[in-house]
Amino acid sequence: EGLAMSGSLGTGKQVLEDFVKAYRDPSYTCTASDEKSFQNEVWFQRRVELWGEGFSMFDIMRLGKPVVRFHGSDKGIWPDAFCFNIQANDGYLLMRFSQKETNNNSAIVNNTEGTLPSSMQNPNLTDGVTD
Image 1: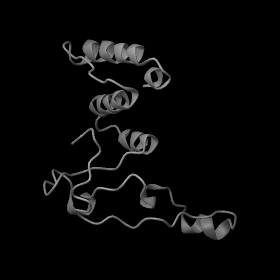
Image 2: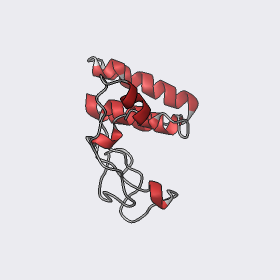
Image 3: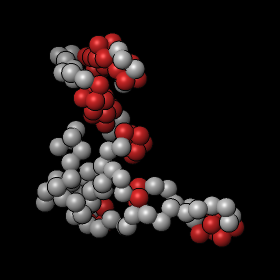
Image 4: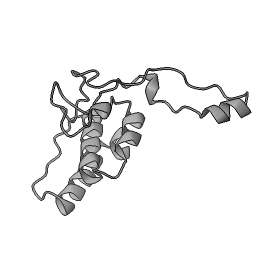
């Protein structure tokens, strides 16, 4: 991803193809035609490679992507309390400090933006990669 985003798209594609061919799919070909589509392809491949290891939220925040957990009315395996989609710019995604910290440190300005997500929120939200 770093190679492509710094102007070496062809080299970045070759590195990605070599990795995927060596470890997962010998017939893989990266079809990305620009930096943004390549960034999405790397994000997709990271989600495949690192599934279940807890890295997706870091990538979501770094890339400015929405949190998409379900599509339409198909909630998949998510329990109701966690079956929601969140816009990329929702303040709820930003870290909050504990009340004890804000009580003891008057210099801290807590993040109070966003609202607690609700079940089946934003059913039509997409991220352009997992759709």
